[in-house]
Image (tube, rainbow, N blue to C red; front, side, top):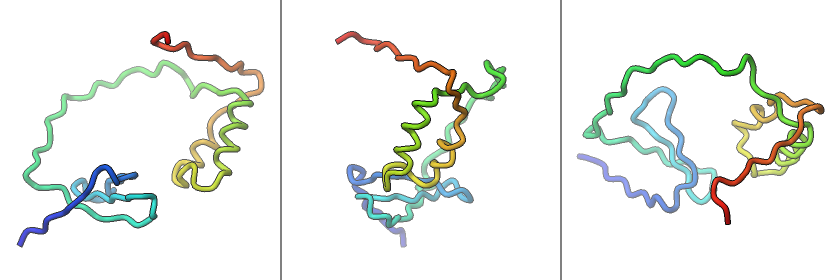
Length: 111
């Protein structure tokens, strides 16, 4: 007997693909912390991807951000529930320097 899943995508707040199986997903809704497992249909065909070309790196190392931006990120990390635990260390490890100037990105479209 086939099992039918009823998932309201408007209520899904987080989707995670299982590391060991590409057809199994975990869905979280309404920030409850409870995940629902969902198996993708076998009828879906895997798209054929073109061969990936190795592109040369444009930088020798990641670019540093300003100390002010880094301090702001650290404040956001300390606020409970704002940034997921899985990515907090990535933010903490960002290269930063006091000598780096903040740059404002210009809007692509004018108001």
